[in-house]
Length: 351
Image (cartoon, rainbow, N blue to C red):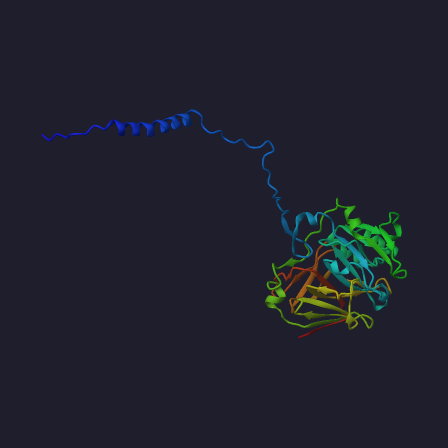
């Protein structure tokens, strides 16, 4: 049997051990008896400064992404003068869609429609014509004009739009600018009148839009075209040239640059031409036939696609289809629509 012998600690060494253990035990006892206090949150608390952005939707008349709150109002369709004395027009460069139509004397006027970008002022505003109810009705909202023959006033009053008329205005929503002479000087306070009628619904989408210029029908299936020359009469031959650097179409009137109020040339993302018949039932005042169908061309991104247009009723939008009957998709952006008379007008597409 093996015996393990131990040696007792010396008194001096034992004293050193006790001296080390006692302070440690005291510290442990104190820590257990009095735990450190937990900090309490301040009375005000922490608040995040993050604000959730507005939901993004597609602008129905432009196909671009915008804040939903920015579209919570009706569209404004106004009859805009295109006489030489009316140029440059106010706010035309900010319209979502512009229609150019033949009127008496061989000159043209516009129906311009604003929704996603409403300027303070638009004009000069002129009188209604017999085809305007058919153009304006699909947008609903507000129709602005400076009067017209009683037969045409009856037509627009029967259309599903809210009329704002210069001849009957006593609110100051229309003004006359001193920079032009009458009757080419009537301006409309566009943003103000739209703000007064937010109870009216926003417009329905009129055309199909691709997600990008590259995906538009003209870019996918069209052919390169550098210039679009149209002729309404011997007095009016507007045109468009493709500016590849700026990626827009530049507008010309009678061969000269067509300028806005800031001195910049008017531009378009899409240029659509429709061959339309002219009804002469009103004598010297031509009526563009809008309910029907005909040949069309759609230009986006420097390329043009032949198409067909159809409009089934006054309130129906214009439908554009290609040779296979497939819906044409425009590029996101603003659109000009040239309503070129079939008989006396012409369209020339240059490569």
